[in-house]
Amino acid sequence: MTRIFSGVKPTGHLTLGNYLGAIRRWADEDQHRAESLFCVVDLHALTMEHDPARVRRLSRQAASLMLAAGLDPQGCTVFVQSHVDEHARLSYLLECVATDGEMRRMIQYKEKVVRAQSAGQSVRLSLLTYPALMAADILAYGADEVPVGEDQAQHVELTRDLAERFNLRYGRTFVVPRVTLPTVAARVMDLQDPTGKMGKSHDSTAGIIYLLDEPAVITKKVTRAVTDSASGVEYEPSERPGVANLLEILSSCTGKEPRTLAEDYDSYGALKRDTAEAVVELLRPLQTRHAELSADPGYVDGVLKDGAARARALARPTVDAAYRAIGLLPPT
Ligand code: AQP
Image (tube, rainbow, N blue to C red; front, side, top):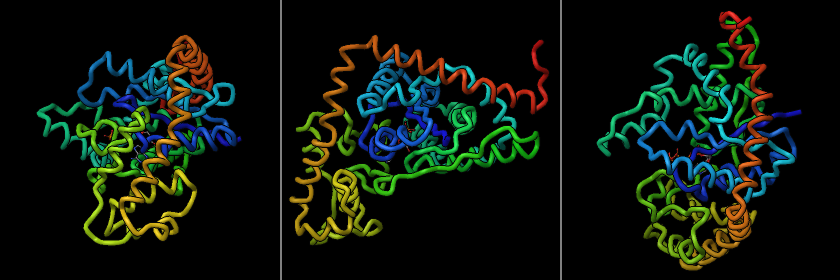
């Protein structure tokens, strides 16, 4: 059976980008067709300046939002990365297979270095080595598929390279995974800066729709979305990114093609009104379920405990095999 792994970092409140690019697919499709593992990848939240209490809070919130989005713990494994030691164990081996040059080529690394430096922060070494840990997250489980948004595709490509290199040098140990992207909204853009990704750890929040935003807040953010001064509504992502972003968001809520949707509108006002309404309705059930789960933290903790036990049992044999293959003496 196909095996799927994917995760979300507790670096901020989850956004519409996280939902449309990843989590909705996990819940609506992936968990029903494959053996699936979905993870709150909390170790990745330590690569930039962080507040320990906030990371803990956001980790539980991310898990509860994943469940609220429809992940069924009877049908898939939901867990927290740091509860399973195998991720960190394998990450070191992959650092011994990766090169400094390929880590430095990662776009997210380059972007986040600029962000850290402009905030006057030092750049943590873990920011550079983060893709090795992400590769470990995936390879430890023998995942065949990794459903992510477009921004993570480069890291999955690197994971493939590391798996192939390891297998070639030390004997076949890892499944070589492939990335799967959503057909629409693979990169939801910031409503205030439609040339940049809607990212949960960005400082300016006016262009970011958070999954737990109130309906009135969502409406205000969509209404104030940056478009352009051209007249008429057309789907031209490179020339008119703001309008294209709204059409893609509406498309992923309605199932209609962005280009077809564009024909229904001759004003930005109507497009924004319908997009805001569609997003509010899309998120309503998730927000209701999240409120119920928040009132029952014991349930979420129980899901994460069972999930970690299942994940550990799956990862351990592969990581042990990698330790043997690379030349480490097994304990007696
Ligand atoms: N804007 C997006 N559009 C489509 N998919 C997205 N994803 C993230 N943003 C978008 C996908 O959501 C999954 C989890 O994302 P993540 O937690 O790994 O990263 P992030 O939300 O991008 O958060 P960061 O890295 O902490 O902050 P920023 O955004 O500031 O760089 C992934 O599958 C991702 O592709």
